[in-house]
Length: 207
Figure 1 (cartoon, one colour):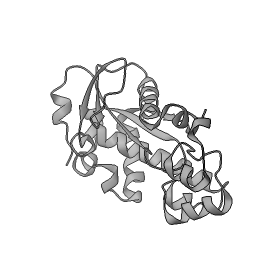
Figure 2 (figure 1 turned 90 degrees about the vertical axis):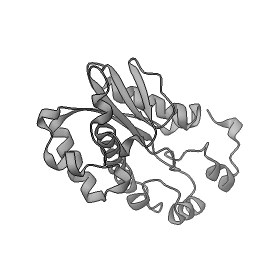
Figure 3 (figure 1 turned 120 degrees about the vertical axis):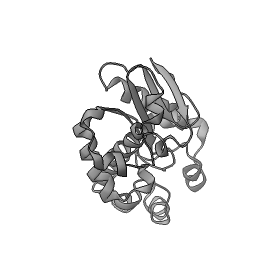
Figure 4 (figure 1 turned 60 degrees about the vertical axis):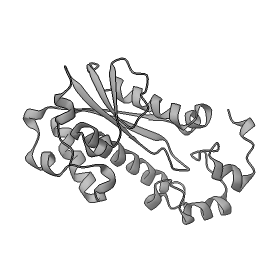
């Protein structure tokens, strides 16, 4: 279970950053940055918060509310246009920078889930499997996941037939069938291989 061991080894103010949405065929990539006020951290979060992928949707929603009550949070996103223009890795870095800047005062160090450091205006430490080790990163993963899932469910009400209310943009059979039947929307990532294969998209025409 994640704890504050990594945070305790850092000097100064520490934030955890994580993203969600690198793999979907549609929708933005979303990142969150979290700085806990440990004095206000409820016991339930300290003992139950985990990587968002290991939690049910109901648990994520509950913990996201609790995190907001005891942490400073910044949320950033990179659009489908930015994903297609720059590639998903660079778009992820854009989302992380935006999340960090929306925290307010810049922290001294950011703990980043993964092994690729984004260019940030503070010290950076990458942590492979960080959302299962650091409570700050785990919190960021939950907030980012809840934020993006809500966005995709809202878009599902406007774009019927792709299954976004359940697949939140990932390439499920229902989603692929929707693309084949209805074609892509402006929220689809046209630079991603499945869209190019299904629709004969020429990547050289990507903006």
